[in-house]
Image (cartoon, rainbow, N blue to C red; front, side, top):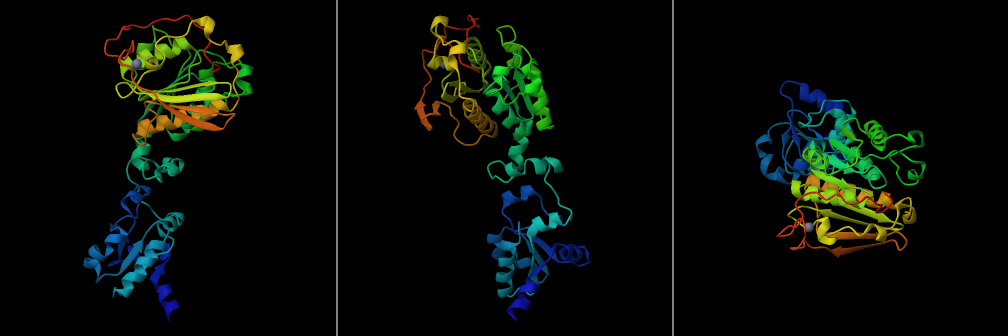
Length: 378
Ligand SMILES: [Zn+2]
């Protein structure tokens, strides 16, 4: 008899749909956890999480009941338990809401994401720390990338894929053949083209949700304020020269915008987050740029092709965390990666009370135009 009982304990989606549409149909109970509701629900269902069934299902004892969860496992267990407790007419929706959706039956989706976005960002929505609300935050966010080179390439690709609503990209350079060994945003067909144009085309093709704003110019003391005033939530520093780094640092301190910093050299890279008032700035670590004759030239530098992929991807991860307000950002922490040793290290970095820009008595209060020279291969 047990097998007969099993059969009665679950019904398929089509049958459930039919019963629910009838006059005096069963009560439909969604037994999933609250965070799972973001994936959608079946209309007119009552939400009673599984662990609260004993306490809250009682008013429906005389009704016929259909339970559902995500895939039908929990609801089948619950239906068995309830029938043993004397509920006469309780069944589980076989395959859960998943099977219901796959059968083409209607789902009610919470506000905010359209159907195509639910599919595109489903692997975000499934994470409790992100969910629909987090994805909406990403879609509402604006991130400025300084540099569309080695670091900017993976950062831009992953941020666009993740659904950052607006991506600004500043770079005045054109795509050169020597870039393609690491700058995966660009293709051979884009040789000679402005990097921001090549980037914009690639990113728009990747995700039509993202508004890409290309700025085919160099960051200067004249344009930096106007650019920073556009309301960016985070700036990703993928610059390849000292003047830009210092300009961006000073501007971000004065505009109160966090900067996710990355730099690379040969086999080594480093990442940190400069968050004004929450941690140090770039000048707390390096108050002034080195004299040009001591900085490595671009040609001498060199970089392992995949290295900016690692560092730029971590910059992307830090950016998403800052936008979502989750996890432990790399504020006051400098993460070092050595590709040859295959090791990560971390050193604490502190705000310097004597910092010329973010210290207690700043000595630099307007932009400094440093002589341009190469920092590291971008
Ligand atoms: Zn500082």
